Image (cartoon, rainbow, N blue to C red; front, side, top):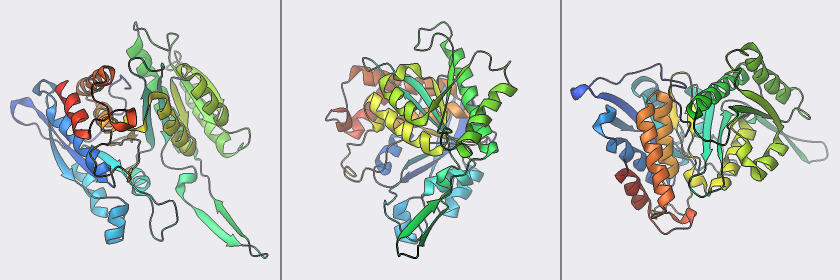
Length: 377
């Protein structure tokens, strides 16, 4: 998807070299809620099916997090899950979480908490069309740790008896610089990978800074200025990268009208969340959109869809987002060849269109789609 290796190679390698010169990697599996339990096994199966020529073997540890865990134990993200990820695992896959839309006392999203505890400051979401679909090839790089997602909210009652709720929108220079730097690095890597190859961006890589600083001049203004600072301080390194800006409402409009013009889009947490889910409509379904939660020393692959309780247990959830997220995890860990192998198998599967789950207009099962992709490895 990114078509680039070693963007953020893991600083930790607890895996041991096994027989035949194989590298053993330990992957944490966090199914979470709903269809997470059905799609995370697809990611595991794909890793287990990689050929020996890739030089990798895998061990797995099942971990707990989610709303179901909260209802059973009062804890959505157990300390043990975080400890095992930090101390034993090389990478992880997270399925889905059923966050309620109404307030539940004591509950907070485990994936938001996990991103903070693991230092995963970026959510990277490639959106790429395949075959005859509308031409799209962009990566949305979303800041992952702050903005309105700090969840510092208050509510008070006025003298007339009506209520007022307020939320803090936090934007820091440090987080904005980190996400800006990653966006420019991804743009460089994508530009290098496309060299000499026909693409939607023949004139070189582009970073589009998305904000609403025309209204939120302090918070979004700081984000905009800091991301531009990354470029200004590294002009020689990023000389091949064009820098553009879009006000977020204009960004939404143009993304749907002319998605082919965007390459790497960098945004604060809330805008990035909305843009990346909306972009799924350009390529058919949230069920095909992967993501990676990325830090300096760890990565968690995470499909972009939710827990989909309406189809839970029916074996019809689309596993493609999880399988692509598995490839992204490997990519950010520095294993470009097996990641590319998985991406290629998924692309071939989608072009042939022999098997498709209901979200893509087909009647195939999760298992049938998974098996068809594995055969192509």
